Image (cartoon, rainbow, N blue to C red; front, side, top):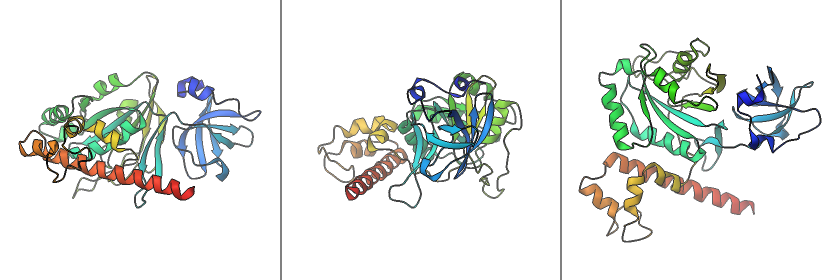
Length: 322
């Protein structure tokens, strides 16, 4: 296959030429100091020296084909990232150069809309197009009703109920995927991301794990991110489950995730209203008259505070560096 089949385009072409004799490849697997890349007509294991930096799945690298050593990681078109847990401001790239992010939740347990909102915040920050999948529909008595509730909360994004067991919704999901592009499947452990990819590939290419019986949570079978080729030509990326996602984003993107709430905030009496107990707060007034879902409002306020704190930490780190 040519590099075009793996997502090569003008953005990356403009970053060439590299060192004499260097080849270009796209990272399909990555560990701390090694990557496996899609190159023209083959896959190649490549060492990643420390001075080159850290690569994420989906990155493009230049490498010496004889020594199999990377010399450069090309600039990313975009990245799905989070704030590394336990750090005030440390960015961790989860996936690079993606076009669509499929947020996968499972219907064999109580749905967590607040978790989906966190993933939406990360996806919109990356610039990728979000798509929501409610997997394991065969284990829920009312999958269509649950999907309808999510659509009513925010009709901007497609919501599809799927079941690998019955095949429900898998074809509808594939119809929404671009023929050329990179699609990352993200969501909590045990949501069935690997099983869903295998169903779309029509093969058991990715390892499948069980879930704990007592709480239906996954055992983190997917411990590495991996890029695979779908028969229609797009690339699918399986990602490890994340129980608590802290988006690497901004308050402005949080406003995009909750447009109906942020619009109300523009009518608050004080321009710097924190939407707590200030007089003339339009958002609190809407909460009291029942026009805003309390859970959705709490999620908005929490995410906005997190992103304000994150931006403050980033600014402090930059000023300290200066």
